[in-house]
Image: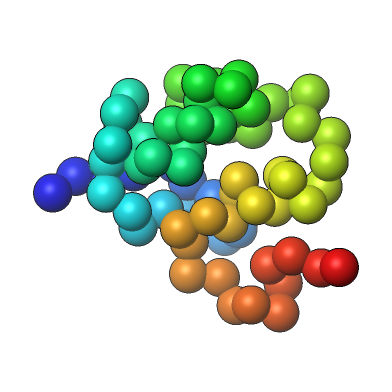
Length: 72
C-alpha cells in the first residue's frame, strides 16, 4: 500500500506513515490540501500563520518525539 507523500520539515526526510487516501496524501493531509493549507507538493503555505496548526500539519504521521510536537 502506498504511503502519504507529505514530508515533514523535521530532519528533511521524515515522511507521513499513513496510507495514501487521495491526491497522494493521507486523509488528514488531503484535507489540508483541499483547505489550501498545503500545495500539491505538500509544502505548507505561508497563509497558515498559526504555529500550532503548522506543527500539527508538519508532524502528522511522522515519528517525532512528543516533547517537540505541540506546546500549550
